[in-house]
Image 1 (cartoon, helix red, strand yellow):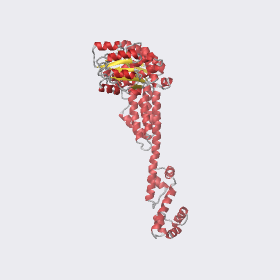
Image 2: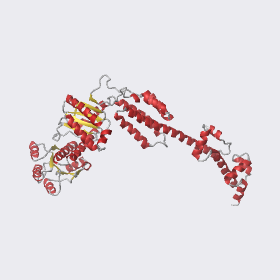
Image 3: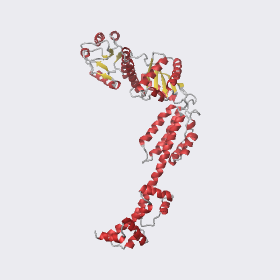
Image 4: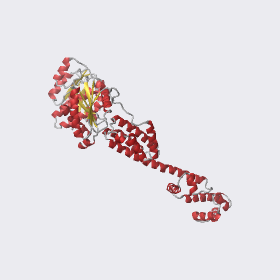
Length: 528
């Protein structure tokens, strides 16, 4: 599909610039042509350029908007025009529609007004074009992205004074939140084309809801959530919700949660309606059973959240992470706290989410403390996975995730032990370098540094690259050589000074390590 070309015509510079910047046109495969200043310029340019959508003002010099629309309708019937005007006079509105406009939007136009008008234009193009689905997918993507920003409070659009671009006026609509907890199978079905998947699921929801006066969009920041807005009666929406639940569960092979917020909302408070629906969703049982819920005020402790993990347990868990005792950690998490039984014991979704988050926080604190072994990206991914995968409502999966974290912590504890041992060995080497003249033995040093003899020996060899006795001997001989080079001290005295009370033994060690005896070495140094 070639880029869809859009031309704006308005004699006010700031209006043209506002509309130019209101939407990231190119990200949707739309080409916004350089805006025109009046109707005559539009007609001149349309002789040379293909224009798919024309957005025009009414009151312009030389050729007004209504006359321009008539000319476009006659000469370029494939171009889809709509009006953005500061005039709400009935005659202007009537004449604009008679001249072919598909919408009449009042200034100042909101982002959502403009988005809805573009969506409607693309829908009209789709009906005329052989590549119908491609245009519908483009329309679907624009709607998803722009409406989703309202749920994220990225832009709170103003409710327009006159709204002619939607069958739902958003002054008394109810919100239906549809959450598919595991998108794995359905994503595979559509070869991980999320735009196509979103488009097809919205088509299915629209087919099941059997109403025209609805808006359905996919929350692009949480792709497993779909939002439906309708002015229909709550009883009818609940009935349709149950039908949608059954069908989507079958299509997606996933648990489905649907929440109806019966409080009426408009575009300027859709965020609050959405938050209320999410809050109600959090109270559902953590099981794989699909549900339909209604957002309402909790009464007499209804839907209260239990604290499933105490501060004392968290403190004990911090100690257990450091111990690397996998068995004890599993016993605490899975049995004592009860994560293994959160589904059979009917924990709330929020209780599982909060408990897992607190457990993961202690794990992350411990792993972050392993300064040399802490692989921040790897571990941060685990934390994010825990936050996301809890949505699947699968207690077995949650416990498997915790199992992975337990094993990583055990490995880190082992690394930490080895790491601590390495630091101790370095301290031993530094001690030998300074106190080489003292009586140094393996057992004496092992005892001094609180280590078992054989483990101390192996660790020293691994860390330093040579065994302990050789390191002591080499250090002493190097010190002896320094004394020989710096003065005429008696060799026997030098032997004693570096830790040998037996000159004969010193002589043997020196000869073996240097290749010549102490006396020959001194003579060679004098000849230098």
